[in-house]
Picture 1 (tube, helix red, strand yellow):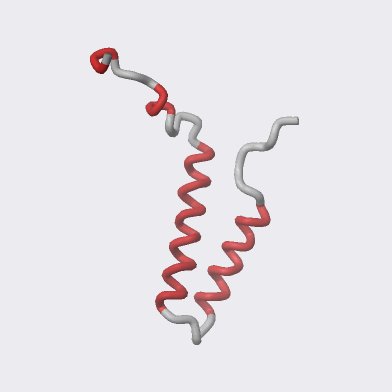
Picture 2 (cartoon, rainbow, N blue to C red):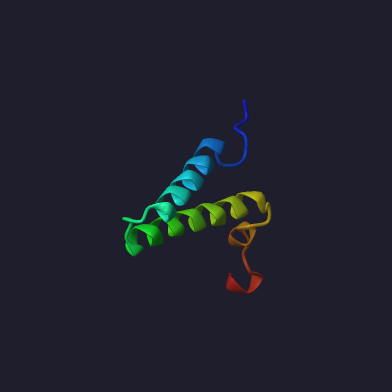
Length: 67
């Protein structure tokens, strides 16, 4: 059985929920908020890489002049 491509919806939902909670928390520090934003942005980067079938293909090719 082939594993489906992509992130689990649970992970996506958990990061979204955490982002909303931390941003609404008046006791959360700027560092706390920045860390959660960073994680949410990283998740978005990963989702874009997964959806782009061409991403990373250039790493497997060799230039003829290098040999």
